[in-house]
Length: 145
Image (tube, rainbow, N blue to C red; front, top):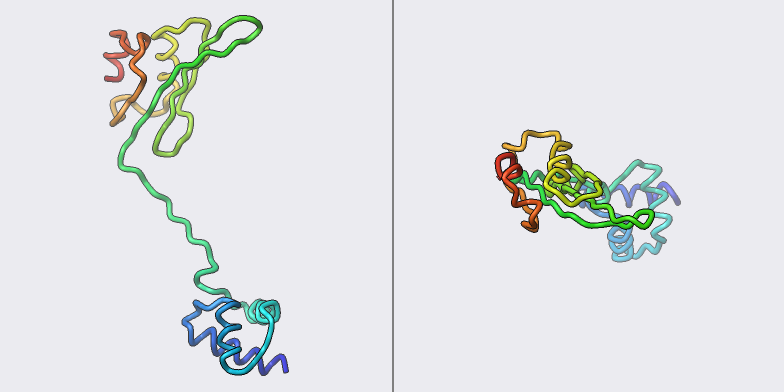
């Protein structure tokens, strides 16, 4: 009995160009007057090493054309003192490209965070910040803008 249904399952699977899963195979068997469960179909498919093309996950890595970094400064209270955090985020992969913590909110804090970027700053297509006073210094203008 198992071999009979296994042959029918294999025939339906091959006729579907290996695209049918347990639901569609069950529906096709019901149309032929055969009533079996999806679990049974799954066991038969597993024993025959049948995997639907649409079951296999296919991941595509998307490459972004732009090489963009955004920056922001925020403050954090540590031991009753304010410290400032400058974070640089790479938009192409959403990872932190650089960061720096300091007691003063200055252009040097931003420059230290920029120095952690592993690529030449001239290769950046876009550098976006909130254009605060720390980002308006001539030091940054020569290096980034």
